[in-house]
Length: 224
Figure 1 (cartoon, rainbow, N blue to C red):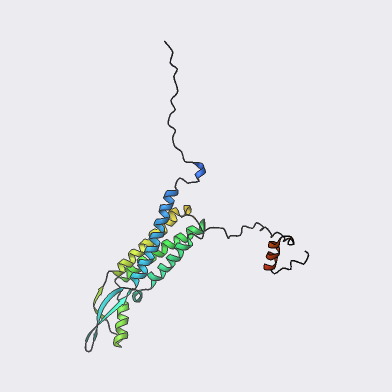
Figure 2 (cartoon, one colour):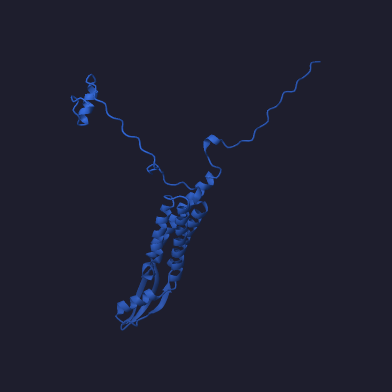
């Protein structure tokens, strides 16, 4: 009876990341955090700027002929949220222009601008100073005050937009070191730039060289 030799069966090998691909283990997470940071920051700033222009407070000022209805929008109450939203947008763009410690500083500025916008909008939700000033200006009575004062939901919408900017800043602080930066293609690294090769005199036997010399404003008949 013939003997049967054992043939080794190849075992499946564990799949490893291809080092030639250059993909970092956390590249997918970095892309997700980058997209989330951009979306939250841009959406939060847009919400703050739009909601700040809406009516925040309503009331009536007493006059000799009755009651005068008055309204105040967010910028009448406080201009802080809109200003900080613009700062947040600038910081969101600047995050990609700097690296290292500079990126962390800009990310902190982004988070603080969102926090400041949210807090100032929340404080303005119960403010009546803007309407009192409007009543005094409209009636001509410095002692005029507002009655039947009510506030809308727009201050809270503005505060929610500030919280979105805050979240974008926190994402930049946590994951910003993994995010890409603007290309350094045009940055000077101190290395000497190669000089232009000296031009040679056009070959009189090559008509195309003569035409090129004429296009450059050179005299092809002059010897170099």
